[in-house]
Length: 324
Image (cartoon, rainbow, N blue to C red; front, side, top):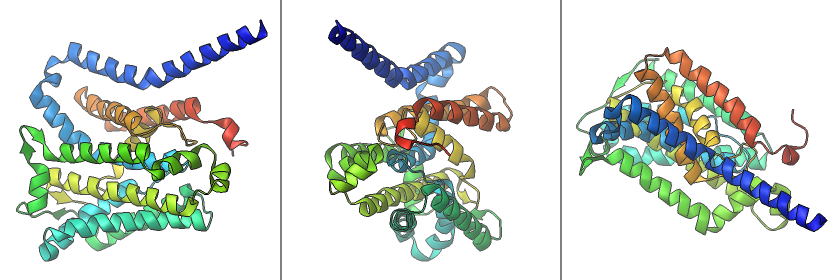
């Protein structure tokens, strides 16, 4: 009888986990249904193409942010990296042309790799490292631009490609989907992916099993920085200007997109598929609040409340022990 009861409890727990896993998808489906009922034109092909253009930079920030959170860390510098990438594109393209894109993406990866190294080697909390990097990058962008916007050469080849469309689909969104699929495959089939989940689930046993914590963190944060740099390039391909604070408003929605999709802030649970769902929810909230005429400050109120609820629902308190 006890054994039978244990089976029933185990089955109930599995069903509860499945329901929680389906929660973000159900929320996204409800958002789509509401949009279809209240404003059917928002689901037209033209509207969806416009939505994908607006969504591309934020989705890329969500995907990049997912990796550190899977480790149980966080990268608060993503928006500053994206803003600085846009500023550098304005300054470097007259001299380097299309090579500037490669330099900027490598630079973003290098900034992220340095954060990962400091976090792992010096045992500095990721929150502190990325918060310090946020300040440095924001200050650098303000200093080199004198806190002013800079124009982008509309004839710049690669920026034109990102802003263009292929068969009606924005090229920027196609690039984001390609990066998303590459990250899914890396997490699922490469040893790197197994190491990320192992560290996020239980770091000490992973270390004792031979997982290189320093190398894994360096790669994770390098990928996060590279995604942020590409997101900055996507932003300037839409605006045709750069500014030191161009992407600053995207930090909170990016973190919300990761957590509301089901990736646990304590690490080891979630992935790119859930972050796609969460990212689309965050984008729908941003665009929906604008369409409904809400004050922009309402977005931050909503996102702040969502973060509190999502973290409370997903954090693994047994793994953390004492929460400080």
